Each structure stands twice: as C-alpha cells, then as structure tokens.
Picture 1 (spheres, rainbow, N blue to C red):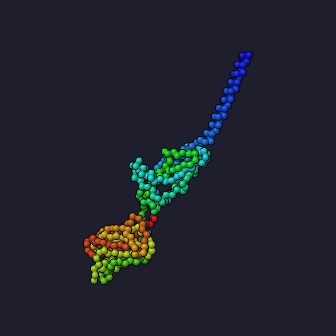
Picture 2: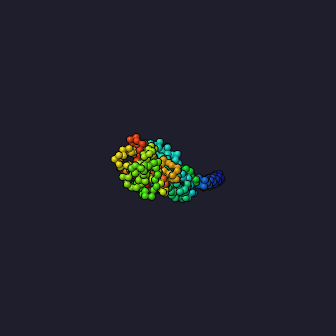
Picture 3: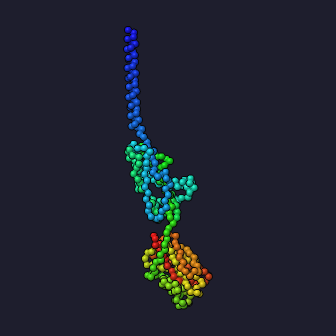
Length: 327
C-alpha cells in the first residue's frame, strides 16, 4: 500500500515538472519572438570608395562626374536611408593630419544629384549618387582642391561605420593652355591724347595699319604734349581679350620709347577697369603682355606714364590685342 502511494506521488511530481518545463518553453518562445520583432539586426553602413580614399584626379575646366553608393556589411532589415552631404569643415583637419595645403572646394563648383541614398530591404548596396564638378568660373588653374563627402545621418536599422563614412576627393586643376591669336584690326577705330600731323607723319591711325615702319607720335609741333600719353581703341564689338601687344617705332632716332604703361578695358568707352600693368623695353620686335585671365570688352586703352630716356615724347609702331584660341 505504501509503495503504491509513493508511486502515485512520483507520478504527480513528474507531471508537475512537465508542466513547468512546458511553461518555460512557451516563455522562451515568446521571448525569442518578441526579441525578433523589437531588436532587428542593425547593419554597418559605409560610403563606397573610402578604401581608396582620397580619390585624386587632374582636371581642366570641363565638367566631370563621379559616382558612389553606400553599402552594408549584411542584408538590411527594412529600408536603410543615409543622408549624404559635403562637409568643407573637414578640410582643415585633413590638411593638419596629412601635412597638406589643399584649398577648400568652392561653393558652386560641385553638385550632388541627391541628398539621400537608400539600401532597400534585404539588400546590401544602394543605387548610385552622382557628384558633378563644374570648375569653370569657380576654380583656379594650377591649384589643388579638397572635397570631403560624408554620411551625415542614418534612418532605419543601420548605424554609420565611422571609419568609412567619409570619402575625400582631391582635384588638381591643370595649368591653363593658352594659344594666342591676334584679332584682325581693319575695322577698329582709335583715338589718342595727342598726335603729330605737321612734322613727320605721326597720325594715330598708323598703329592699326599693319606696317611696323609707320608710327604714331605724340604732338610736338606748336605744343609739346607731355606724359601721360594714352591710346584708346574701339574694337566695334565685344571681344574676349587674353593679351595686348605692341611694336616699338622702328626709326633710328626713336631712342626714347615709352616705358611704364597700364591697360584698361571698357564696355562703353566711358567706364574703365585696369587689367594689366606692364613695362616696355627697347626691343624692336613684337612684345606681348598676357593677362592672368580672359576679359571681355569692346574698348581697351593703354596709358604710358614714363619714357625710357626721360623725354616727354611718346611714339609707337603698332598696337593690338589677342584672344586664347583654345578657350
């Protein structure tokens, strides 16, 4: 009888243990289920190209495009959206760390095709974003610029991988190619501060006749004109000017060539902008004075302020302007 009671008690204990184990299994399943729903896997998001960063390129003034995307270290659970932007504040830190002296990219010289990139649910890579570089009018020839592009924010089940969230672009702008071509001058007009019409023919129109042996001479008959002397040219239409040129008077007596001079340009012949200061020599060959950059004007003016010998007379054989034929 006692054995039977003990057996029944043992059976009841086993039943109780089975109920406890069952409850534990159910609880564990609920816990796992809840964890799956509330704690999805967070992917590490990087910007592509950071392994080979900085990206270096030599450019001219033509537009360039570059593409990049964002990637995850495993398949995304739900869409992961990264905000992308340029951060010029990183330039000084980069220069300090690397011992470089890159200039910050100029606002307006670069355009991002979008400000966000999305890794779709179940994917590890986003579509591409386009970076367009538009250097003309913003960047300078012969200079180097740095543009940092980074992931600035993230939405969805992703975290920014801070060791690969910035890609650096370095743009080395090539030196400008300049091939000068002289403008034809047959329809130009010219005026001056004074001209000699009574002695040796020294009319100002001789400066545009294509004959280096004719010349302009400041007035010396009756009244002797003194420095400064000026010449003003009307090109009749708007022109792109990259250089001015002169040819000295070829006469053997012409020992007092003009020395110091400056050039100005104008769109209306009334308001002038100085674009170049230059110094003449005694050479009888054509002398070219190139501008740092092309200017656009309808009129140009040269003013002579001193002579080589110190005399008051001023004379010249030819005067003209040139453009850059490869622009």
